[in-house]
Image (cartoon, rainbow, N blue to C red):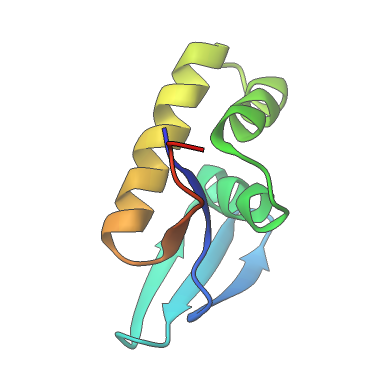
Length: 93
């Protein structure tokens, strides 16, 4: 699993405790994140990797660590496909 960080051309705004909005400056597209997505984005912005984010999700919601990790990895892959996050380093390191 690759480690990601927010792309430098993405601006985020927390609307309330349950929703955030991302703006890709490159594509001029907005993305709305629900409560879980917002939390993942917040932790990712703080430099957390998928494993640490899944641990936090497990502590905050009633899901198993495996369920949380599956969700986080899938969500990060979707963000990557949209160009909202970029890989950090390489998997060979």
